Image 1: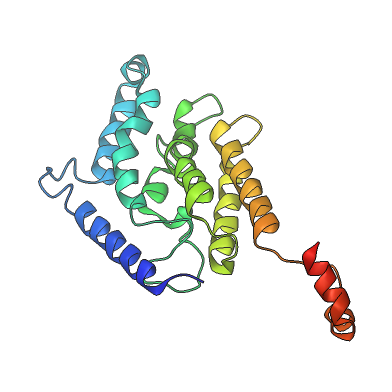
Image 2: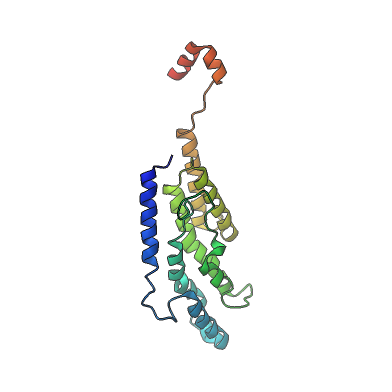
Length: 211
């Protein structure tokens, strides 16, 4: 059972973090304060000067360019909790502004255009490590709400990341299996005899407890 005071302190800290994040870009110029204008400038560069765009390795720099915007929004997201409490699922990744803005970054891309990997790269570098840390140290497998949220997030991650080739995705799955095993071994007390049998023979039940 979650301690009410711990939950209150967590919610307060999370709210303070979100409030602070909302001020980060306050002093930035309008052309740099959000994803949309930065994306527009980068795509315009690619459209007008594709060779210099490619020669500058812009496709490989794009995840670093847009990561701060995604990080700021992800401060308001958790794979285990929802703002204000409740039993609903974690907010879906595809509902976030950074995701919807960058999903079609670069315009029409073919299989050989690395711009098509922008969102999967951000998921791998930003989202998956957050999920891994949550699964390793914060998730309570005995909490049905947390477990449902985590299961939904892991399912979403598997759309983008293959655990056979992505180390951080493998780390997520290893953490989930380990925590489930630990919970089964330490918190699940399965009686060796049915209650009807031990109630009929109290001495036998006492013997079982001593084993």
